[in-house]
Amino acid sequence: MTDMLAPEFANQRPVPLRSPESAARLRRRYRAEARFRAYGMTAIVVTTVFLVALIADILRNGLPTFWQHSALLDANLAADVIDPEGKRSADALRAADYAPIVRNALAA
Image 1 (cartoon, rainbow, N blue to C red):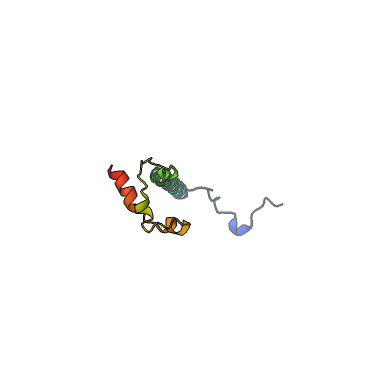
Image 2: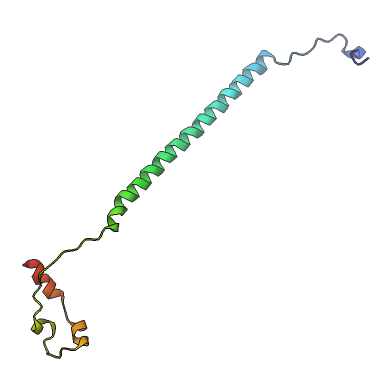
């Protein structure tokens, strides 16, 4: 009973599920989707390359700050330069100007 068509639809041909036009639109849509995915993957790859380059540059410029360098100098600690008043107190030693002593040791 359900296979019977109503009288007004009895003379009509069945509509094909995919016409050539709809198949062409579908192919175009799939190509556009593939292009969109390719653009997305390209953007992710380019972003990753720039991120790796940025991190490498930061590490290349920043790693030397983790090393400490020192120099051993023979300095003449003359009492008349460090404590010209001769008080020999801890405050006088803390307040002394050691820069000329270091400069003379570096020059020597």
